[in-house]
Image 1 (cartoon, helix red, strand yellow):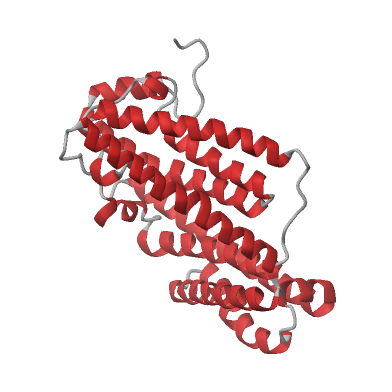
Image 2 (cartoon, helix red, strand yellow; image 1 turned 135 degrees about the horizontal axis):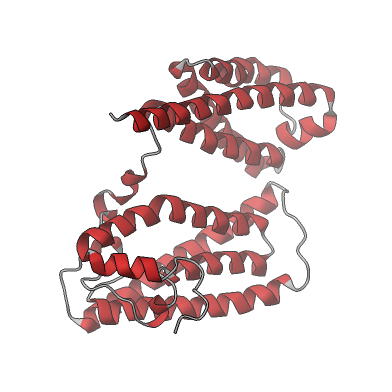
Length: 309
């Protein structure tokens, strides 16, 4: 391992240990507030007995996080596992009782951050390459018939949009209401969302059909295009389908008046940009070489370059 890489890894591990230190301090502060303030206790624990919960949470969350901060990796694993268990259990409790919704959101965020920190401590980084394993591994399409690729693309859009833009948003809206964490939206949110959804859907359809028509493949990782597509929306931005999907998600959130759905779209954009996009672009560079490098250098990922024709 080279010296710069060792230094980078050491820096990341120090950052993760610092996170566990902050988590331990935050957990202790929260418990003090929960015992002193009925408002905090009700918002985060509902009717649960704080003494019983603290008997488990203080050693397994606060103390374990503190030990992880000083370098005890086993403690980091314990804190992370406990945080995930609490997030799930509290989520079920809040869904059934409509209590402790704020506590659920806090624990979900803590579980996600703890898992990321744990991955760095044990694996040296977040294993984003796991995303493209099995059925999601990058492969070129084997069939080159245009009509077949277009038909497959339309089917993929219906399936993915139905799941990510209908099933998940409706589930999030239900949980947001059950957990009583919804926020008021301005009256213009729904009309603006409808306009954004129309624009984003048109962009997504145009991008997908252009890819399947000209690229001899589909947007699905397991049947990717055999030719680099730089026409249609791809002439202006490198990833118009991602832009469309993220905008669609945020638009659905505006239409339904759900900040959780908007947050879901934002988190999806971060996951795609920092985890999926580097892997996809590495695959494109390997398959198309200098052609893709020139394209990447001349066309931006998110925002069209002014004056490009």
